[in-house]
Image 1 (cartoon, helix red, strand yellow):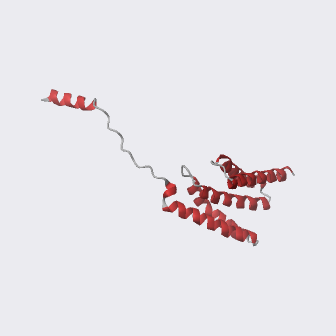
Image 2: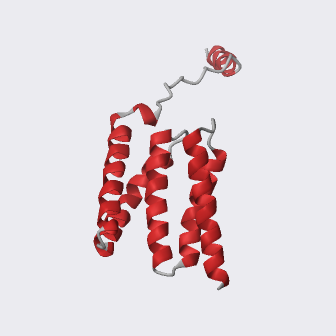
Image 3: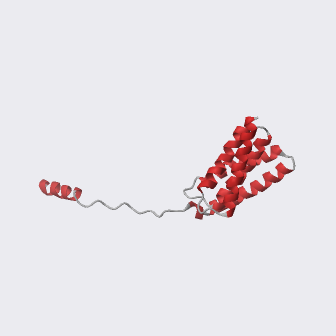
Length: 149
């Protein structure tokens, strides 16, 4: 009886491999949390911009800092949406401008470079993404000019 069992085990081991289970690929941008997080970022950007415009830099900075985890979350998915990148870009642009006003030119330049990379690689290019690209280029040029002073 033992040889039969051994033959059966060898035959089973030589058989075709089982196909791996196919798991449904979930697009995180289609999940509720994603859209909610993007909307939350847009609102935080509006609040921070208004505070900044009204001379309340510390309060604006607190909102910008609080938004960082949400920015990372929405841009870290495989294919972030345009509204998510716009919200992240708006946050980085405002933060960069705040740093520029505080004479932190190197740090500001890093944020503007992030936006430059976002909009250079975005496809398809639109009038809005091209405008954002030019804005990032101009901000980097301003940082460079001030760094050279």
